[in-house]
Length: 171
Image (cartoon, rainbow, N blue to C red; front, side, top):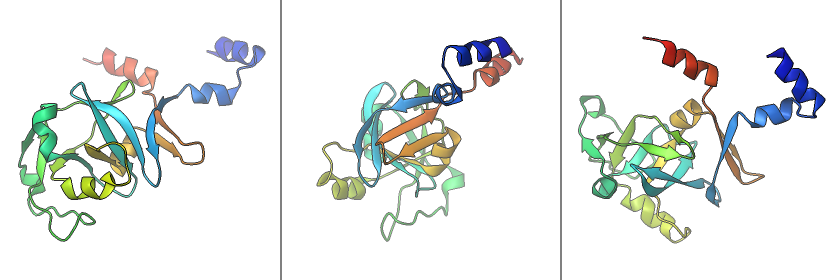
């Protein structure tokens, strides 16, 4: 390891460049008040709003058939309330059979399916794409997202290869 670091310094690759290799740049489609990125849901193209003010990650329940994911009521969602989405929020469901991918990584989170029609309508006049979901702060933190508004760039921390190799060695 020391040899690798020494060689990097000798050829001019310092700590800043090494740190950059820990992140994957995610293509930003729109960078306004909230960045919108392109990804896939079950292999189909999707647009997702990154929302640092949202505690949870949401998918538009009306898109379930198109993307092939399942929505089922979970006991843990009974009595659960979402604020900021209007006066009355009904029809919360857990999302199953779904892989959401950004760049090379699957974004793991407890997704909630909900009718996002009102949010989509309010954004439609300002956007050239229709969003299919919202990635909230918990998932953003868990995956090490960096949102750089100044450079209009979104980066996501790459999984630690040491952690991955240890996990694969475990029984």
